[in-house]
Image 1 (cartoon, rainbow over the protein chains, first blue to last red):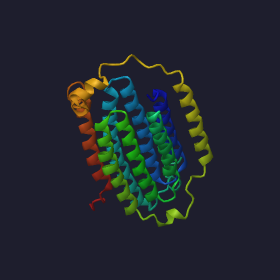
Image 2: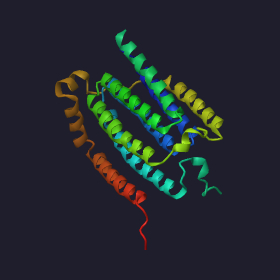
Image 3: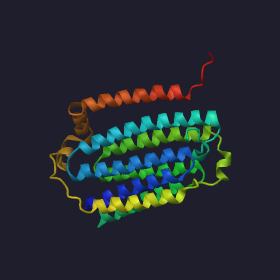
Image 4: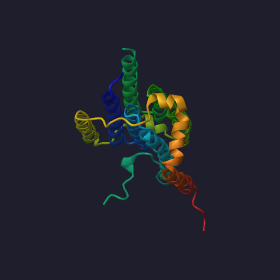
Length: 100
Length: 170
């Protein structure tokens, strides 16, 4: 029997790699992919807790997280297309109109 | 011994693939490594007796979301992408923040105490099949969040159309 803490640590590591990728990359698409990585880290945690605590609530929550991730991917990619049409770039450091 | 070996394989590959995904220069390579990562996560769900979620992971994530990403990566002409720098100028601060967050989260996992187990044991789920149990729970106790998810998905569809369409000439 694999201990529960190992799964939680794995989810934590995946989440942190997602955070780091989001903060470090300049390509907007990779930043969105990093958000998906973070959501997957959370999903690993939820499913493992749901299995070890013998309660299906975590899996229901994972179901909702996956559908919100699908919605977020659609909206985010539409924003990237609009950005690329207006600025012809996909890099975050070249978009600074709202900088004060 | 065997479950630990399986878990070690999946933990090492998932961590490695995540690092590869955020460091590739070409976004297409990133998305393809992400596909491999999602299959491994689905296998981890199978390992945790969540076969319906494993199927959903493969169908929705690997089948729908990643194809969407791949389409957009190919639509945007990113030919100069492979020649310029990958990271923004302030990447050391982002890396430091990520490392500090990892330390804080690992330290906060250590004093974790599990709650008393619920009633959905492995035997009960095996007797009634996982999908049926999950569906019963979803359509009785969690019906209202399910309806809200329907609204969110239609908002996503309408929002994506509005954002991505060309502006009409007035």
